[in-house]
Length: 607
Image (cartoon, rainbow, N blue to C red; front, side):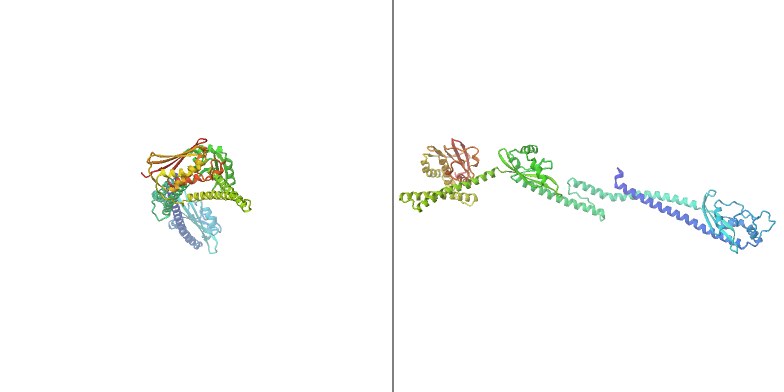
């Protein structure tokens, strides 16, 4: 666990760097000190060996001086601060006898000297052999080694003794321990170890301090980042520094600020989008790549004739029954929108499916727009029927008018009575077309809201009596008796007399028109609960089927298509608009073969 913490890593790195640095510097210093001690001692010994070699070379022919010099050899050790050996040209330091023309002759040693003169009775050190070999070749030589006797490092130097003819006639060897170097180095190592220990403690302390100083803002930034991931975009690092960590903390604060603003904007846009989708009257279904529905809007339940809440499991079952999987698969494969029309519970539904494609061109799902086109197709059929009806209504009188006019122009009718009859026919057909055009213009004005009404105090009893009286002549032609019965003391109310008379004339005209001969039509007016004025019109006509009732207020709609000569289907549409202008309500009850009951209600009459 601790190995994963950056503070531990930083501290360990800091301590390791300090230890390595101090150890390298200490070792370098010790090596430099050792080298300096050896070099200084070496130069001193070489200078003294050269001095001894020069003296020996200068006095090589004076035996008396040599004997005196040899007598002084014991003092050379002390003078040179080292053990001194003088050898002949063969490297033999023990005596001068048997040297022939060697060193004994050169130094003036005569016969009768016995075994010769011994300069130094101590044996040569082991490393002297190599030094002597180099020196007898006329070269100065230096050798470093460790002596178990002295328990220290030792130096051995050799200098050749050269006579006046530049011949090597012997050598001078100096051998001495480098006194105090080992002790000094050991002391230096001890000091280095103590220094390293002290540096270790200091490095650990400083490492922990600076690591905490470095990681504290990092922890704050990490905590802030975690808060941001939890949705808390108001979190801030609180890091106030001028260095890179401060810049990083400031950048993270700016990120949190802008991310919070962006997320807030996204939520607002999502809310707007949800509101827009919810307000759309068409159904919307989103599918994933496995063709499963994942989201719908509220309008879909109504379109599919399902109650709320409309669960996705129920929707999936309904879609399986509609068999639109092939359409969804094709749309996602082709990446092109497509549509299909399906029959569902008495409705015609249009499914328009479009693929959902991301920025990389990958299909991530699809969305379907579900439209109930039953009403639009019905209205389209009504429009076609209206065009056909209007065309027929215009064509029939125009044909009659044209035939009559042609007969009159061609002189085929000469009798004055026939001519008058033709004129009346032309006039009647012209009036019929005028009524048709008038109804169309009236309905257009009502639908556009451009028509104005003039409201006055109206007594419903007189208005209904006037309307019944106006329709009585037409009713008498079919032997239909129109009866009006008014309740007592009906209060007046505000309304447009002419528009209300037109309204009741339309209802009474339909009642007479679509009733068999020798029947009756009744009109009743009365006050009912909640201060409401009620007018009921009953007939004994052909009746209207239950499935036709919701559509009788549509323009151009005719219940019985076989009775085309009875109207164009505009009357009830006009009546409905007139009723809406007076804030009235209407209800229709009908049964085939038994007649129809229409009830009109007006609220809040003047009392």
